[in-house]
Image 1: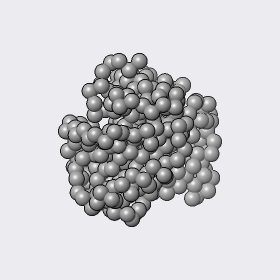
Image 2: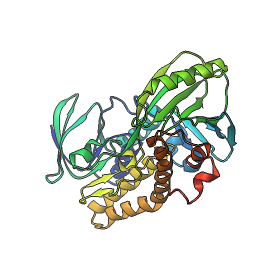
Image 3: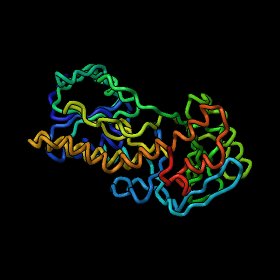
Image 4: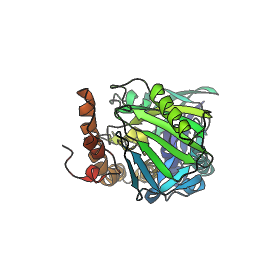
Amino acid sequence: MNRAVDLLVVGLGPGGASAARAAARAGLRVVGVDKKRRPGEPVQCAEFVPRPLVSEPQVRAAHVQDIHGMRTFHPEGRLTVTEHFPGLMIDRRRLDAGIAAEAAEAGATLHYATRLERLDTEAGEAWFHGPEGEFSVRFRLLIAADGPRSPVARSLGLPELAHVFTRQYTVPLREPFATTDIWLSPDYPGGYAWLFPKGEVANLGLGLDKRFSGDLKTPLDRLHRQLQAEGRVGGEILGHTGGEIPVAGLRPELVWEDKVLFVGDAAGLTHPITGAGIAPAILSGELAGQAAAEYLAGDGEALEDYQEEIRDRYQGSLAHAVARRALLERAFQARQTPEPSTFQATWIAFDEYHRDDAA
């Protein structure tokens, strides 16, 4: 099978599906591909969306539970309660499937369980392998929404984004609560642990930098046992997942040779401290899909305008987060246990994080 389209979207998470939806609604011929078998499965996400960023109808439709604030557990045992971080816990399967369904309704052709095998951007052609066998797609533009280890970026010879690794369990919740609970500890170097409630269950996970520790299971199991002893969660593991989160900040160039646009994790839009990335993925996908339609309609500045819009919205906060990460990384690189003040300077709940003195 060979197809000729206006826009090829690689990766159909919230960013890629939003791009496909926006471009198809603008009248483009769109093909989207994703290596997952079904939208949003497996879930590789803690599923929290900050309330100030909730404007997407499909985010609201995926709502599971309101979150009213954040509790941060310090390494030395102190607890800080922060009320100005409300948001929503969502069902990522429902979110991804909802946006993908709208993209298909708008006319986009979506292929799942499909992997990119080869890409020739000069010729404008990509080759894939999926359930229907081998096929190729000829395209005028391509949107890369294929994660922190973007195969598209690799095909273009671009460097892989630095990333941390995560491991997460779904566990029964014994004690209902409505905060995001965060643990800062040298046991999670370059990351943190979390317990996020979703009604009768919770997402219990952690992230860390494998340069400093390659073992995610031992500290996560230890925290699980601690929370069982406290009567907060059950011992059964109902599901488990894991993945990578980019922590390098915004990719230097979001548009490659007026042919490829990067969105979401592939663009480095995930927050390097918190790992939050759903809302910027949706927005960048929407803007990229619109930019593709405008560019192919004759607006020669549309792709550069997309890049500048994303930079204006996100580059400052992402660069600040990268600088804050560097404070923590320096301590671990020196094989030192970070001081409590360092943890506070590198976590968003504290005033120290927001000061302009991260150098």
